[in-house]
Image 1 (spheres, one colour):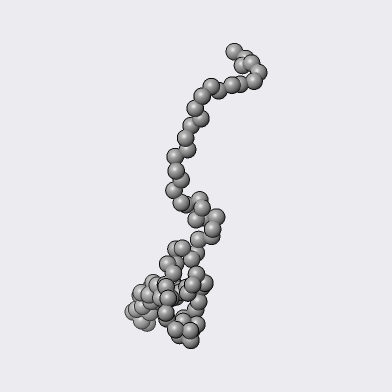
Image 2: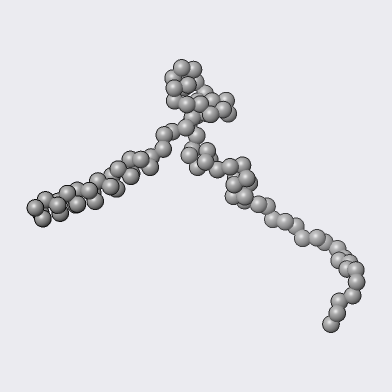
Length: 89
């Protein structure tokens, strides 16, 4: 009885990663003329000018993309810097 329960536990431990790996896969996303389309719509409308969208770009919001894009160097101000008031030393 003890051997059977150990083998069932071992089989369950091996089955859990296999099941979660299959669930984690995402379905491909497509776009046509800049609009997202499903696989069924591609079959009905035809596959002309249809592109597969990368899952990274599809899951990022416009704000996230603006934060993640590289910025150019900001030029420092040239010329005399004027201050108002007096610094206390």
